[in-house]
Structure formats: C-alpha cells, structure tokens
Image 1 (tube, one colour):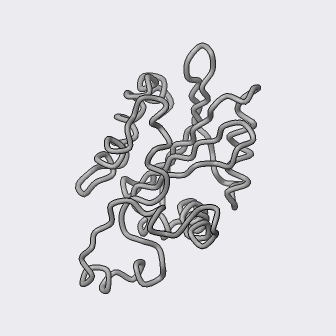
Image 2 (tube, rainbow, N blue to C red; image 1 turned 30 degrees about the horizontal axis):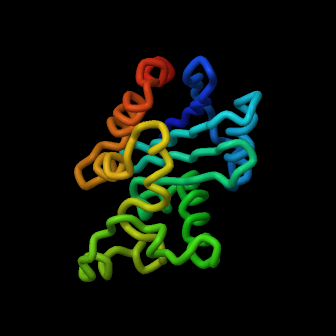
Length: 178
C-alpha cells in the first residue's frame, strides 16, 4: 500500500515541513525518535501519515513527553504495518490505568452492534472509526470537533490532512512536499 508521511516541526519562525520515509519504523519509539531528531529544541513536532485515502494519523511529540496519537479510522489503520504501530499502542494504552479505559480513547464510534459484529476488525479489538486523542491540535487552533468532522464518514484522508495543515498555517509548505 502506498502512503505519504511528513514531519512538521514547529519553530519560532513557523512550521518546517519535510516528507519522510517510514521504512525503518517498527515501533512507536522509532516514530517518536524520528520526530525528535527533526528538531533542535523541544519544539512541537507532528507526523502526518496518510495511506491511500483509507486513513490518516497524526502523532504529536513535545520534547520528552509521551507522544499523543490520533487515527482517523482505527480498523483501517490496523490493517497496515505503519497504522498498526499506532493502533496497537492505543489499544495497549487502554488497558493501563494511567490512560484510562478504551472508552476514553475511542471517540464517537458507531454504536450499531450489527455492523460491528460483521466487521472483523471490531472483533479483533480495534474499533472502527476515530481512535486516540482528538484534542492533540487544540493548542494550534484546531478543535477536537473539527478534527473529528474531518475524520467522519465520507471524509477523504488526503483532503483532511490538507485542511488540517491549512488550519495550522502550514498548508502551502505541506503541499510543496506532497
């Protein structure tokens, strides 16, 4: 499957954006290290990942803090190697008391039990729909509700990342590397 990945490092002068390869990424720690290596300071770094308009993810790393993750569709992401790194981490975190339960991490899932019974991914423990921290971009001016709307049914992940970049003020520079 084809994917697009970019590192967006927030600096005093704005956002520095560069396309990146994820070939050496096997764990969330690898992805976090990639983010931290892209900045000299403890500036905020975002990694945008999009796979064939099936799903997108945003990973936010602030200095030495634990990364924050948002995935537009957990079940779709879980079917890919790069996405499963993120969804596995989110599902693992759900069982740890410091992160709360899975209901805290899963945002606005469909409650249609019949659809979930038919969905193989739902039975495997990865929810269909948005998963993770929908508030990770609030500080940059993108409310959780807006992020969820861009992740909703019928949304196109590539277009969503462009809209998110525009809201963050780095749409042109992201477009240049895309």
